[in-house]
Length: 402
Length: 108
Image 1 (cartoon, rainbow over the protein chains, first blue to last red):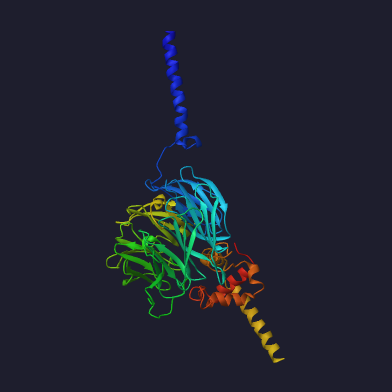
Image 2: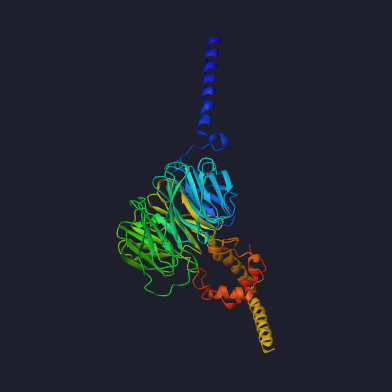
């Protein structure tokens, strides 16, 4: 009898000893989040006016957490770590915040500049770069610690330029453009933490944003000061800006631009790129290899985002103030508007699920986030968020230029 | 002497216009304009108006610029720059209300 009891106690003791490291190994259960889960379907919504984020589960279409204390998040954007667990959030006020989506908490937050516009993460996930207006330049940080790795002042003859269109390129490189100087720089970190910086002149008059194609080959900068865009073939032996779509405005006066369009790799739709025109109520279609214009779509207002569904079949477009209550969906083959609807006042952003079956839309002045089926256009879910703007899914971790 | 009269007349004209305009904005519209300043001017100037692609709009930056001059920039923009004319979207009264709001540093 006593022998049995001893054996039972030994088994019990072994189980207890086994459970202890198990609980620690998950790393999550310890902090009061008992659920063990993946992160591939998580995302964040920026609440721009309150400096907070809503963490959501895109499969269940529900918010699962909230993170506060991120400062001024007007015009905030985010990039994701390769393990799809952490996001780096770039605030307008120069704040750079690393957040943990599993625990809905801030891991680390630094103030790295006075005024910022966005950032990028290197292809290997080890470097986070931030584009700054003030002081003009790019600062690069260690993704694990947020310690400074490099400071690249955007110095030109006019002083320091505001930096826009910061994109990651394969081979631990970052590419960005100088609004004031009209230049594009490539910072190559392939040899370590001391970058070699290549300075390209002649990008054009006031580049306002840029994209890099999903294969990492072409960097394309939109220009505010002239009718056209500039491409750089990153596969070329020598990098040189090449002007495309010159004179797309046909010499007509531009409409007043109340909000700059945004460019991103989602422009790629089949064998075309869909690009928002500046100062015109048009989406421009160009061949993704020759960069010749292949068509243009007349749309509801001046486009801000023209985002291809991940399969490229449709392009969803939202618009600048005061026409920002509307979304139009374009057919990528014909360019025709196949659907128009009004989600509500101030539609700011659209984010597709990785395979494009649903789209998440922020409706700022309705304090709401909507989820739509992208084929039936049926609203599948809606939840409250305070002045929502950018929406970022963890699947961005696996896309060049996101 | 004639020039002094012209200046005086201009000042009178400007101040009366401003008063009339400021009165013409209802409290409801004022709330909407405040939102417009924060979010739509904020697209370029930052939500707290400390600057972005466009310059800092904190009151100290105006350095005593009279509100009617600010209103003129709001209404007609600055050609050759990214500052658009807001005349298609705002009445003169509303532009003057915004100018007064910015000049006295009521920015959010």
